Amino acid sequence: MALNRPKLPGLLAKLSFLTLLLLLTLRPDQVFASKKPLKILLITGGCCHNYPAQTEQLKKAVSKNTTAEWTVINEGGTGTTATISLYSKEAWAKGYDLVVHNECFADTKDPDYIKKITSAHAKGVPAVVIHCAMHTYRTAEIDDWREFLGVTSRRHDHQSQYPVQKTGDHYITKDLPKQWTGPKDELYIIEKVWPNTKMLATSVSERDGKTHPVIWTNKYGKARVFGTTFGHSDEMFSDEVFLGVLARGIIWAAGRD
Image 1 (cartoon, one colour):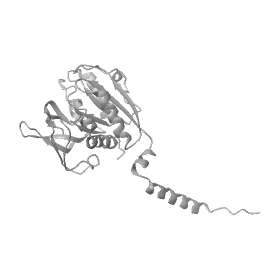
Image 2 (image 1 turned 120 degrees about the vertical axis):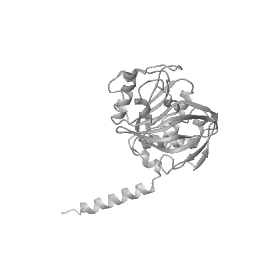
Image 3 (image 1 turned 120 degrees about the horizontal axis):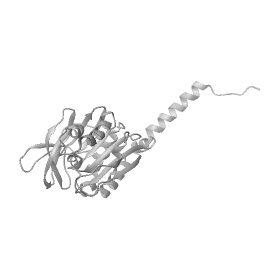
Image 4 (image 1 turned 90 degrees about the horizontal axis):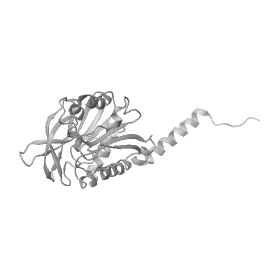
């Protein structure tokens, strides 16, 4: 006796329609959750900041937008000179979708050591650079790190509530108000903006009235880089607007936007 079997093309069409319907009914965060988790390497530690608390806040912010598996390297104590043991490995960034730099080692200046870091990013490893990462390796004579960051900075103004002006539309700043004032933080003085840097938001020095980028993107070699000079205080790392910018910056840099 012949069995009545559904025609394959018709069945596939029905399944495709049901799949599309399911995707349309899912919230964005549910769609994100269906993707493979981001493998994130966080390099943190050094002078002047509450890095354990910042790390936890950063993880929570990202978890609201996508799934992630974190590897946290917190070495170097609280000084301004350190070398991270991970960088001694030739393929130190292998297996990660993204590296977050939230460290503060201003007086480490060995050019060969710095090039081990920047060369991995130039080959295509995406990055996020936060606050004192801009002053890390600032005493080095070579510009590799500064070109990687997208900005050159060696000093900052005092802590204050600096109004932020959004300068254009971008996925990273889509929920940032056109004008926003967050908690107290330091304003970094930007000496140079590198050619591949696109400013997304700026703020004005209370001392000399000059405008400085505070949120931007950069293209370094094959890598996407997202950066912000804010992130000094625990209050800033508790601010939902700022954390939203960080989370979207991570997603954008990793190519998940």
